[in-house]
Image 1 (cartoon, rainbow, N blue to C red):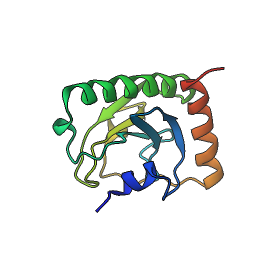
Image 2: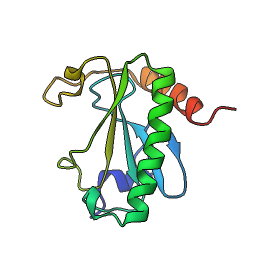
Image 3: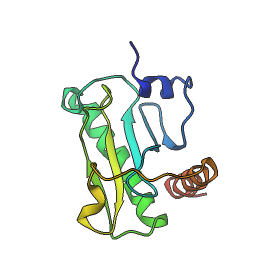
Length: 133
């Protein structure tokens, strides 16, 4: 059965996309720890990050770096944190989380809520920073 992320890649479920190429996709986490919290995934469905072949793993990290740099340009934060949990969705993914303190990356905290307009505006500014014109 396809993961929720594979359904997003296939366009069956909408997302707030911030970047995409032929192998990878980045979109806002709809249960964010911070404004600008992004998930970065390979389009190919692989359950565990470290099960990716070396080329795909390296490509995912390069893609995530590009997105993280964009987040840092447009979302007020001291750093962009990286987390890999991988237990909640059986599809390899990386969390990119804007941080102002170490406590900002605590996944046990209540998730923030934003309106669809707020999500769309955040996705737009990050996307524009990933691909400046």
